[in-house]
Length: 240
Image 1 (tube, rainbow, N blue to C red):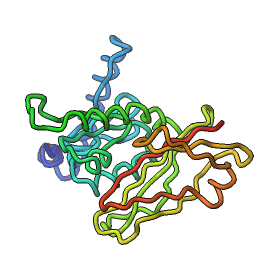
Image 2: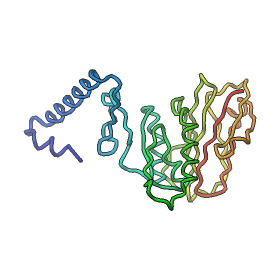
Image 3: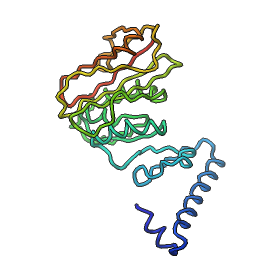
Image 4: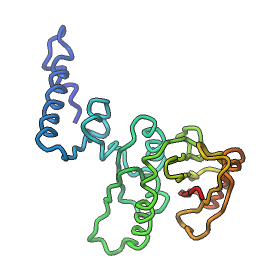
C-alpha cells in the first residue's frame, strides 16, 4: 500500500501534509495506548516493506520484515550491511534452501518461510543452518563494523563484524558473490584486545579452532578462503 496519494488527495493545495501528520499522530497515539495497557506487548512496524523505519516508530516497535525486497541474495546482503549503522534490530526471512541464499538473509530476527508440508526439502540442511544462526545470533547485539566497502556488484565480496566487548566474543559474516574472481580475503578486524589471544572457528567446522593474537587480527587480519562461488561464511571468535 502506498498511502501518499490518499493523504495528498484529502488536502487542499495550501494544506498538503496535514492529513499525513494527523495519520502519524494517530497511529503513534494508538500504539502508546496499547503499550500503556499492555507493557510487554511486541509491535511489528513492517509497513509496505520498511516504510516505517523512522525514529518515533522505532521507539515503539521493531521491523520484523525490514523490506518487501526479500529472497534475492545481493540486495539482502546490502540490507544486512547498511541497516545496523542505523538501528540494531530488524528482521527478514526466506524460503530458499541453498546455504548462500539462506545466509544472505540471516540477521537479528529471522522468519522461516518454508512450507513445512514439503517433504522434498532438505530439512536436515535447513535445520543445520538455522541452528547455526541461533548460536551466533546473540552477536548481533554487539558493536557493528563493516569489513568491506558497500557494493551491489556481483564481482565483489561483502562482509562485516559484530563484536561484544563485554563478552570478549564476536563474529564475522562474509560473502563471496557469484562473479567474484577472488577466492581469498584478508580482513583486519576491529575493537579486539591487542594483548589477548583469540580462538576463531567457522560455524561449519566449530571443532577446528585456530588461535590468533589480537594484535595479528587487528593488523594483519583474518584470512578467509572461499573456493566456491558464490559462498557465504560465518566465523565466530572468543577471547581466551
